[in-house]
Image (cartoon, rainbow over all chains, first blue to last red; front, side):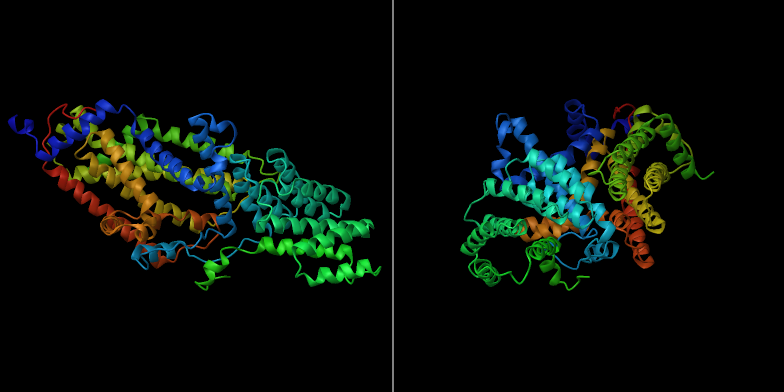
Length: 310
Length: 263
């Protein structure tokens, strides 16, 4: 049996250097190792993904312990991932254009034929398919305001369910209290349901908590304030409080002096005349503007380069 | 009977004695049931996410099953000493390698079929629709990918312990599936020597992404054209054949000593 006891160099190397240490040092079954690999990769990617929002990583109780910080990071990363999947669903499986140093390889061409890259949006009843991913994102990371806002927007404009949108926004108000964008969206939904009183209450709440931690001189906060003031001014007009509306329209002009339409409206209101566009029509126009802005796709500029927008 | 089929049949009998496949089917069923009970914002039944997560789970479970079943076959025969009576019969080592691959691959495909049927049943049960032509293509290409996974595990199993072979096969196939498609983007940030390594890996390792039709199924695109389908099938068969040849090359000169590779 001399032949059987002799080992090749490779076999000897494999059994002594790879196999024996593995068996002695790693009683972990291979399937557990296989699960650990993607989990580790996910944890690292989650850490990288949220590196731009350090205030959320160290927020609250999670700051106290290392495991708390890791779990908080994972939740944030998971929430962001589900949000990205919702975006992917909205674009019917076509993800963002990534800049590659290598183009036109056999595998890339084959991959594009297997899953074509066409820029199309889900419309009508198909919008419902993005909702589970937004739901999962909300549940994974209840502190992420943007997800609530997007979910509420599509529940109104895609699913025609403003009642459910209000439920989502109420949950947002509980989980992310004192954020003006939540109340602003709530006001829009109420206005769309012709409930002006509820809309006014929501907008008042939004104005009370503005800027909700944002830089008050920053573009986003100012844009939000202008929207709030315009909606509230329109609602004051609907309620018949022209004097209060005039005060708010002046505040809007202070922030956006280039708005000629508002200047004309202000002149009409202060002169005791009826504005060319009624307050109700203005409210509708503001809602439509918001709807159009929500439908605008930030993938457009990427895909325009490829000329494949359908 | 052809010795290839006899060896493959033995793999089937071993799997039927073990409970791996049943456990995975039950786990997938539990996972899908849990998904269907979600109340998404009160909107009622939707199927897209159930099919998507179901197919993702099917990919994960079929991958785990293919690697674990294949990686333990040859080392198991050697540890139990059954390799000696097997090779004493009029079968070549090439037939042993191909027979083992065939058995493991067919087992993985059968389990995969159960996973796909379960996903389809849940989707239809919830009132959803599936383009069955795309679904069948997705299953076919998935099975082709499983052939490559089995061949990779078999290649490592010819020279390594079962657990080591499984772990390496998981790393190689999982890494290929997750990272290889991103290599063209990574090349832009890599240093010259890193770029060379990445380029070699990109061309040498199997590209599982071309077998993945989940997005076509979920997002309602039509079936892949037949020329592309045939090309991908040929690519998968060629990679599997090349890996089996490598496995045979590694196995043909191997000398056995009873109990040298304990399981």
